[in-house]
Image (tube, rainbow, N blue to C red):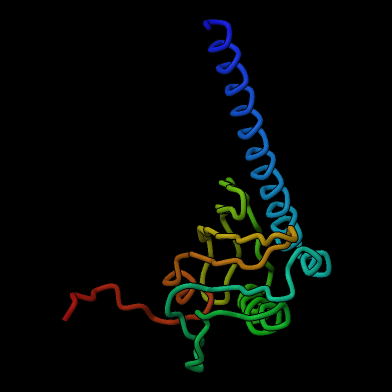
Amino acid sequence: MKKLILLLFIITSFLSCTNISEREKKFNTTEEIVMENFKHISNGDMESFQTTISDDFKFVLTGTLKFNNGESFSRTYNGYDSFLNEFLTPALETMPEGLIFNFEKIIANDNGAAVIWNGESEGLYDTYNNQYVYIYEVNDEGLVSSITEYTDLLLTASSLLGQKINTNYKGE
């Protein structure tokens, strides 16, 4: 009986290790997909970036930032063309010398990841050094289906758009 219990314990332990191993493989695959996508965008290789995203890709800029013309900058950009033409190109126009991407870390699970990075540039109105968190979702086909950006939009508004920020707000 002791041998049977020992054998069951060994089999159960082996199966548990196999499951963890498969899960870790999925995490690693997701991390590789996300890092490939991040590498392409940070190098400005938009042709390669496009090969890593799904047809229903969306990019979400959180917050309530508006362009100087009053149009909302913070919103969901549906599809590659919207992301490139309505978000990325106008954003880079506020940084004439480009944006330097400094990768910090990635935290991945089986279908997504958080990428933490720092961006540096000379903006149109001031030096720009902002922290970012990109939340990636990866679909079953191994393509990035969405990126949600979290960043300091007050710094973006002042350094890149020249908007005056009221920092003395008292909640009135």
